[in-house]
Image (cartoon, rainbow, N blue to C red):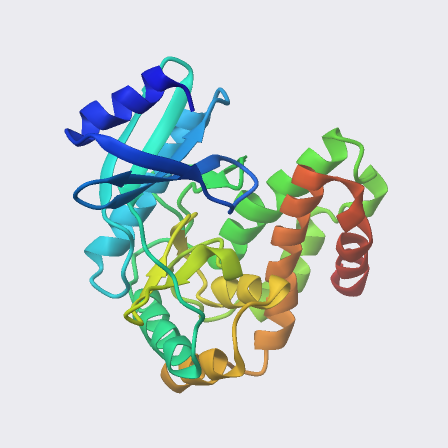
Length: 286
């Protein structure tokens, strides 16, 4: 981070910066802890062409979650750019290793978030999953949304990138045939959208926070599917969640189908090491 950019952040905060240090985290943006005499802040920066839009939709996601009064998110202070560098400035949350009680609280707060509903599936704006565009056009029916806004865009991107062959991609009719019976009686829920183990924080006082959302109104089990894909959540988390929103006979099947979306995203972001998992799920279900 150069001196001009650091001075710009100091002027945004109206506080002198006494220290800053890189913070490990995601693969998409650079992250820093910024210390002032008053408090510490978390700064994300990115120089890609879509970075400003990416941070604006992240800001919208955090604000939308905050407005539900169900689960905490970091306080936002600024979203902007200096030259080609976009930035998002927010509260720094000091983290602790989660206890079983913390996981239980996280599950209870997440379930409350998932009880926030809407008339349609989707969102008022498109956003991002990682650095990939994520479409959120409104649909009345979950099957239509999941096929047209989630699976087909990623399948087509994989085909364009020669990561999947045309013969490996199911038709829209086949997707409908398989998914319609599994997706009955699903109501829109506000979901985090990218709920892996790196996208929650347990603060030192035990408060659970969500970060890096890719929100939309979808099926609550999508968040559960992502949480199980990469790990980082305890048995106590799932038990507490099901005490509020029970699973049913189709849940385990749907979880694998929802994981297909995230595996396609990983295939498109990181390449062929995810091909085998994607191909196996396509073969199993379609």
